[in-house]
Length: 306
Image (spheres, rainbow, N blue to C red):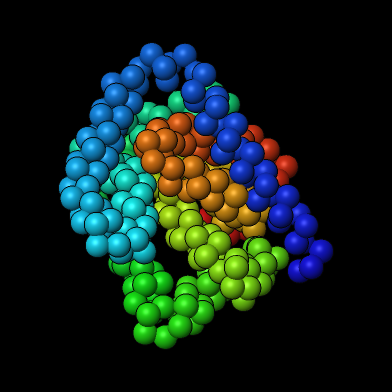
């Protein structure tokens, strides 16, 4: 295990590199700029409208807190407002998934086509239905996770102590990544034990919870096609096994960890986060094509498929 840790860290850094370069590729892609100015304008106006409405509603409360001298509550309210605006990307993508599911499908395929047009053509021939109860259940589950996390970090810190209030969340995170990023998990625990860096550790945990949902959303166009792709690979005896379980391998898990964590950090930035969903979809497609374009790293036909 220890000998693999440096390689896992390198793979996570490579995932972060793929996220950044993939987003840049999308921004400079002619088809993206030409075909998606409408959705970009819609997300921009939605974000601005929500931000303005939030500031207007909170302004009287902030003035009242300033008059009575409750600056601590005023700072807390500003922080809550910032986080509320940062949640707009997730609301936009959840709504777009049901109202306009073809948008992110086409963006993902665009990213695949940049690297491998033949793979994009193969994926496009397989129809998938996004209007499923499974997806609705995953959205509810993620929402419950976020509510529980906020309760642990909020009321838990008040009922117990600031230390024990968030310890459960940090330990949970460390347990989840123990097989892939032991160094990262242990570093996180050390950050949490030091009072000055405790808030940083909790912020990293929150980003990780969001990163899990981001990875699931962005790679759905590929994951939902895996059953059909596996059947094709088995029937055709594809020597490259390009339809195998690439999201399950330790190497690619570390890459996806860095990829989704980087996008999670970018998405929390107000006014920028919503656009990361669009370019991130293109980056996800490009990353999948990157993985599949390396047949030497794929498992043998006898290994278990996803």
